[in-house]
Image (cartoon, rainbow, N blue to C red; front, side, top):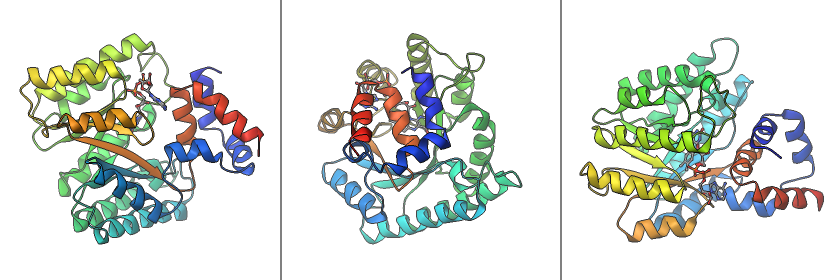
Length: 308
Ligand code: FDA
């Protein structure tokens, strides 16, 4: 099955309903997702922090088309941030938010609704002593997300952004966001984008990633280099040295369940590493995007669905 087909499947509500009806494909879901409840996310984060890692937690869900659901997601983040504070984890654990989960795509006033919810989450994060990073979704939302980021940063300048190297526009966005105090996560990009806006071949995307990493590491912001690609991890290390970045003035980021040994190796080498930990019931879209990155997992997934 092609990457493009899998990524379309990630957005298919019919397929999602069918897979969810047969129940969670537990082994695979558990590899990438902390669990369904707040306490699952806090427990996994605590284990990772004990290993010297830092964490960003994502409450799973996207493309909300219900106003009440958008509010529920924001409430879940506020409850999570309070729990992190109580557990004494806020210094090492932040949260990642998808604006589409808090209402960005709602037809009437979606952007304003998402901004209000994001503000509430940022306020709760500050109260707990931590930060928020806005995930980046498909290219049709990039302008809106960067606009909301700019508004949030007026009151919460610590809010992090995500830029996707596969988009042709991203080098410019990196230049615009490489200023002092600006936290920017650079990833390759996980959506099925048309050639008109995105590089498609692995080679082109990798080259774009290196160009963007150079801009961010040479700039004055705080780069967060999100990749599991061994070649890019190595290149980022040499670029950090070239631009005289001290360890801790940038960080590596990886997903929960992907290359955990490498995460610990980097920590042992003195690097700051943040693990992206998703939790919640709405794991379908996230899981299928991970399968698209690693088609070898697909047969495991299909076998576990078939065995239910
Ligand atoms: P690539 O996909 O080329 O993988 C390189 C190697 O890593 C593989 O050969 C394999 O060894 C290993 N690997 C990668 N994925 C794996 C998997 N699922 N299972 C097992 N091994 C795997 N995207 C986006 O569009 N918006 C966002 O906001 C974010 N946020 C984000 C946060 C963080 C912390 C990370 C690490 C990633 C994201 N992404 C994202 C996803 C990102 O865009 C991209 O899809 C994945 O990171 C995969 O790209 P790599 O750079 O890892 O390279």
